Length: 101
Image (tube, rainbow, N blue to C red; front, side):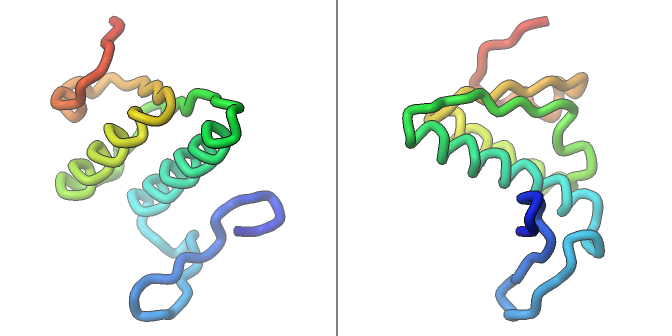
């Protein structure tokens, strides 16, 4: 992470660091969501809970990553409030959630 707390590089199993801006739009979007969830968990663990709000999240994710990320969102929602704003009902239909239309 850089001084502005923005993810700047990613190190995968190979050990090589990849500049985040060189990654696909979907991977960048997923990293941004994981970072927000991480900060949300830190705040919740310190007793300063704040909702994590995602607006039209995961639009660049392929089906496999969308499934994995929705599992992560489902798990995160057990520890903190996750608000997901979307027009893609179908992509998130399997999540257990309070739905507002």
